[in-house]
Image (cartoon, rainbow, N blue to C red; front, side, top):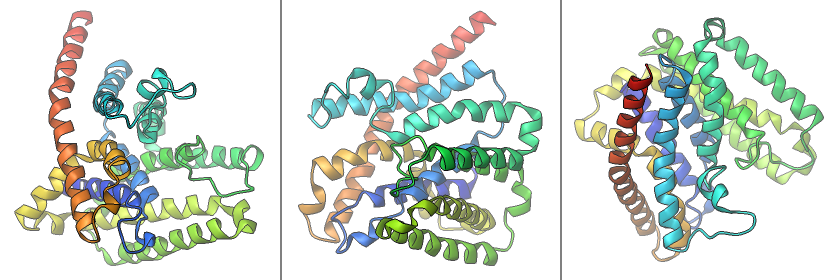
Length: 325
């Protein structure tokens, strides 16, 4: 694994978890960063899946198995403890098939489809910037003619509109993989300035859009700012790759460990934070330590429980492919 990608994946997990730490800090102003973490996840996926070598059925099946097995297992566990319950609106299909409780799972499984065909079509793969502009144009048309701009919800992860942003992030990640030599281990000063500027711009947009209803027609600006922030974050970490690789081994091992658990961390955190009410059982910073340690511990259990299942299904998939070849 490329070192800076491990750091980005771990950062994404940390940001998404942090966004759910409501009541943990002395002020909830510190419980932010979830959307930045989301687009980092999608961008890292685009970077890592750039080289598509198999047919769609085999490629998609592996992605499906890797995502859904941990999702199935944790969903069953949440039903057993009473955190999830069936209802008319949320039946078996909702919880276990689509969309599931986890917006990331449903979103990325949908976006894998167009992403695969972009990566497998030579012209589109060579012109990723053009594809990103086309996606932006479609977003613009939907935004102008079909999107309710009366209130701020353009980055609501439960709504389909946000998937334009997620797909742009995947394509940007693929573009960075395509242009890896241009950015890896280059000067970091410019991208660092970009990260600071657009991080402040993002939070300024969030505050303005959430507090001033009159600016809601311009909420698309926050999507642009997020993509620019993503661009500079990727450039910064890519530029620092060599320096990150020289960090002490315990640090690298810790980052790599968290990086491998990102999906599981995303899946387990809801019950541990909300259902167990950990933020209010301890005072800061003890509550932060207890919650973070609990998330990593349960994510580790989920990882080791589901890994043999995933590997077994992968072998079964390979066997079936060999028989049909």
